[in-house]
Image (cartoon, rainbow, N blue to C red; front, side, top):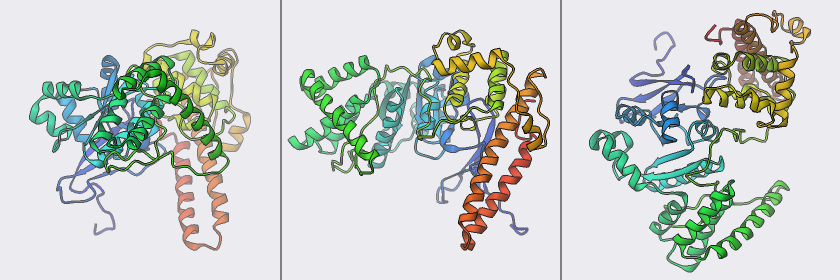
Length: 464
């Protein structure tokens, strides 16, 4: 500290954080002294590391998750390590954040079901409800297990052993219907007819979001048995709720406010407006087809360098997909068809085989069918203006595949940084007269130009 530097991870255990393909992209630090704060810190977010899009342990857990068909979602790094050491190797953790839609989408590529372990206190129940909501909205099955008081997964498996831990999970997991009902009963929300009606509507809101009609029908029957209400009556109420939800969505899009985004407060005993919870069903499929980000990002044109990358990956197969996608993220690709194609080649990589027939017969959709035909039947070269504008050589497709892919990745990264620089320039102009904002924006601009130099030198690429 005497020369102006400070060890960010001083007196902390350091955990390397890898991407789902095994590339180290950041670090997490956990305090050694339980009195110190904060308990966890992570690397600053960068273009490479975004903690809302990373799951700790996923690289190691990918194949076990595929084999078992489900993943166990916990909170901490040490929980994952302890479970893996005990042979429960299909467990992953968030990186110090509440579960995000991007993390659910990533995990759903490998798992058809997600088992959520949560603390049984009020905060744990609320967090669990929100997490299950996000999981179900992606068409992935979800079950929840409350941890015994005083235990976390780490301490439980160390004290009780792996066999007892797995038995506990098996005997105490709850589907979404019973998760809602049991927690509502525990909070005293079903002591009155009015309370019962509100909880029942929460259950039906959840069922109404299930994308698979067969699974939805199964859960209507399950809810009918659990709530002792005829399934025919539940279907009628569900149709009414679905129509009302559609009207509210239209109203919100016109600028009106709503409290439908709030989750039921099972822990406190109050009953807020029912949340439009996600689709449920432990048997729901997760085929990787619903991987769009939650944002309403508008589709944009596909860049020539993106077409080059798709041509290389489709022609050269799994090794080139691994090389490209371990150096890029989905957000690097243009929103719309390009990003959908990137998701599709990742799905092929995860499945361990190329599916060109599926692309060409329209199984992935007409837009991807057309894009695949274009990039595989025509030589797509970057515009000549790229070399003039960026002052860098642009290899063609006839050059070595990895080298050509590396240059295409560089062009794509440069385009994203240039977009960010243009945005910063506009904000800098708008901030004139505000010294603090101008200084902050100027610093960000310097960082972007430094990043641009790193990209031009191709220092961000591993595996060449």
